[in-house]
Image (spheres, helix red, strand yellow):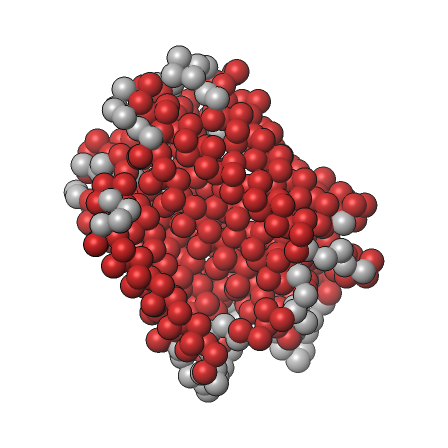
Length: 480
């Protein structure tokens, strides 16, 4: 997939910088809002149980529309979709920053998620167009692209605290706008063009999967207030099930579906995707509620709270890039997925013991670092196994599925733990809040342990040559 017949694109490395910036921003936008949540709660009138929607509105749109974004990138051209995604992300960021009430804020986050769902798959397609003709350069390009993700997660935590403390929370959204403008100006000159392709767009599939996911998350978040057995909760959950079943039926019958269901017959693909789903369902609630514990119970400022999470995110980035691929090569992906999930569960259980009168050094740092080690060990091999298990011609579909699974796990896991925390929070005192946060940590720990046990039961140990491919794929796709 070289860029043209005369040789490689002379601007490919500058183009890679823009592609890496895209990966950096879409991951940063999931983490940058964490430290700002208490300020947003006060200014916009969010209820405690509704705060998770600032995160969920983004990841539901992002995860639910990723498959559609990939399909549109193939049909309309990656460069067009890349530019469209940046324009939409910039518009959503402006709307979220200007919001004066809860509905407008959530609408802005949803528009941001739509932009990210167009940017992410088209960025990867453009990378392949630029470097696919040279395997040595492609490996280097993937490494730089992959490293942008943990860098974005770390920068989001730190920048979120810095901006919220010393400027104001709307700037956690406004920071995207100049980046989007630069990307829009640079894309025509740097990115290769591709002709439009004929084919259908599975709009029904995209609408049913996104609608089903949104309905499920909404029902779980609202259930503690409305009642788990209430008519609104049951009807919304039933609607979610109907929409998701409709999505599967549509995928089975369409000639050109968003997700060809037969791909799940590939050994290890389903098991690795399940591990990614459960990993996200355990990890994201930990990050969300730890932010709230630091600010609402330990009374750390926004900047101090962001700084308090830096050791954890730096540890993740270092382990993912340097240590995890070596351990995969030595012990195999299955052993690391199982060990990592169990370590994450142990770290989450440690966080559940945090006290109302605790402190960062004893109640947060040791357990959070153990959880970070577990996350870093499990993420790389499960992602690499999911991508490398599929045949080469299905690599793009496999990548889209695993990214979608991770975002869906993030949304549903956070929704469930928010409901659990709300049910276990008797009042708004630090004791009451700590009780709710502890319940969320225990619930997330249970998800991680179940994930480790399922990985042990379902993941197959690959042949040596498959493990080597999985290691290379994991290293190049770090935290994609």
